[in-house]
Length: 293
Ligand code: SF4
Image 1 (cartoon, protein in one colour):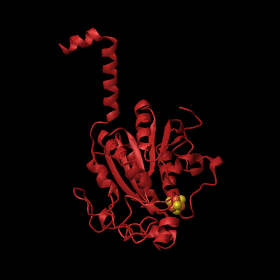
Image 2 (image 1 turned 135 degrees about the vertical axis):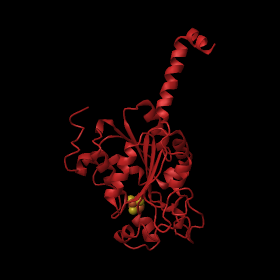
Image 3 (image 1 turned 45 degrees about the vertical axis):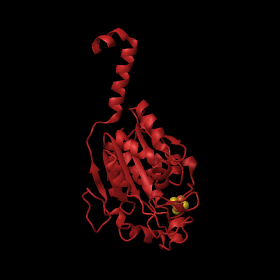
Image 4 (image 1 turned 180 degrees about the vertical axis):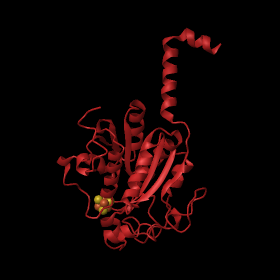
């Protein structure tokens, strides 16, 4: 452990201790919710006293994907939809690291949808933070798998007619060990949820409801960024996020907090045990044959 990279968790949290000053100013639009999500994540890292030398953050493409560049840790900005795939290799090879994925709804659920499902199924220790603003913000405001019905985007100028994913229900059904959701309106609650996800010994999926104020909010006449934040748990997020089967959701509110837990075996340990067995069988084929007789 390096004395310079492990900050005192009892000390007051200062987000600047976890940011790369040389990357400022950041590229986010004024009022974008992604900055709030980033601050909550770094606050959680601080309170858990995670050593920056042991922190790896992998992100894909899009406004959410850009966030890893600002974090003073080992960061990887990878191809579109693939951060979970890269993070899987990293977590398997380096179980000593805290590996976090930052991804957006398009990156995670469209081009990267298959990687998410299989990460949930494997239950490898990873924390996946999916920032859901219902749109591809960076690439021009196209419809995404979480865009609510009727919303206007650059590819649905007359309103979206596709039903949208409930990402938490999908992750829970695919077997994720930990599933939670929070809004950027409640930063301390979001920080606590991320902490719980980081502490979980398997795959943790955390959906952060955030706002794309410039591209999505403006096009849909949703008001100022402050108005959007205040309405995050109301009619902004429609019933399709609420009518999830087999989850203890209150019917009238957007369900937030820890939504599902599944304490089943973590995949990395099983993988490493199998790798040791295969290697020892290869090094000593006679013993391997004997043990099978
Ligand atoms: S385009 Fe939208 S999501 Fe991207 S930085 Fe601007 S407000 Fe945020």
